[in-house]
Amino acid sequence: MAQKSLLQMLEDLATKVRSLERKNAEAVAKVEALEREKSEAVATAKALEREVGELVSLVTLAGEKVEEILRFRADDEVSQPQAVTVPKESTSRERLGEFSPDPQKQPKRLFPQAFIPD
Image (tube, rainbow, N blue to C red; front, top):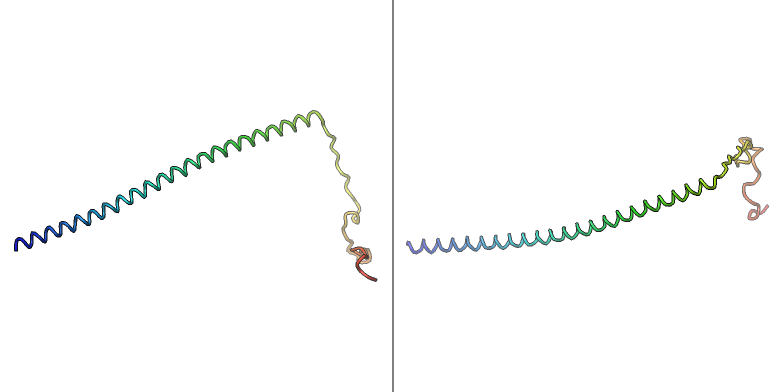
């Protein structure tokens, strides 16, 4: 009987060892997956840093171009001042294309007569 219990204990121990080995393999697989994710995240971060650098360069270049345009315009405006003319206000409502509320003063036709037979 002592032999049977000893054999049972060894089988239980072997079962526990297999279980621990399986858990260990799962943990190793998880660590490897995490390491892959980490390296992918690092690669993505580096790519984003490069893109940010490119965007900073583009914004800087655009700012320089804007300054250049403003300088050119400022120099042009200083060298060639232009007179400002204000258009005269129209007092005639008909010239503005507005219609009179009086139906007799309305235009007889709104469209050319070309396609409408009389």
